[in-house]
Image 1 (cartoon, rainbow, N blue to C red):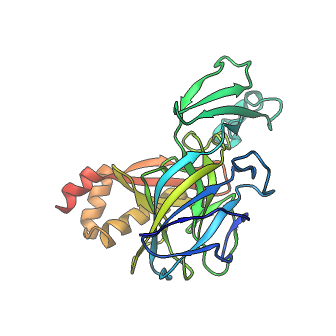
Image 2: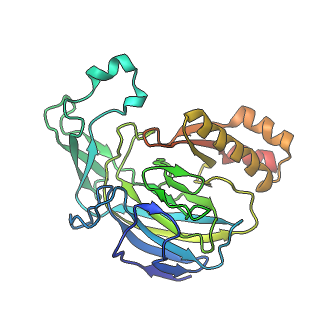
Length: 309
């Protein structure tokens, strides 16, 4: 199948039914690049004013409403030597009576991180006066914001998320993961951006280590599905995603989608799916900083294999 080389020249602050930048077919791969969340490219040039600027959208020929678009993230490689991150902890994850004494005097203060792809590390450069010094952490590149055009002609900000995907900031959206999205418009119109060199669960600092990246992905179409929310799989798990606020509503969406998926994709009956989930589900926290929170419901493939054999 073809691999397309695409160099973006403009970006979008929303996921919407924008004019496609490239038309591709099922099975095609795309090699492209993303900007960091503040709109800086690989050369450090500020080329987009909006937050979380999106590359795309990519029109996938043959994708129609009712299908699911499957996107395999083949690779994510930071393409410059520095990244940045906020130095706060999100106010909504702290006890209110501790909040006032926990944050820096300047709540917009940014940390600077040096990125070394060869060593596979991110090293703290600034601020240099904390007790952790110039700590080095392993790189774990991920895509913070990705998804398809939402239904009903909506244009949804890249600051948030929904059934279409969006700014979910889930660490599991890494190389080797396949993500699926329900398709709402012809061609699906896939967008991506806001890559991180690494990030905590929950994006509790309000950012990961924000970085521009070179990304390769491959698309496929899964027809006639019952997908309502994003989901996917990696080497060890299948998972479903719910995006909403409050957090328990996001968990409800993710769990409901898993119950559906075990039936429509894997052929379990409702009773078997409920029993399996009741003993085997695991949860990950995606984003709990942005307007909509993200929860991920997972089942290990080894467990699922036993249930469907």
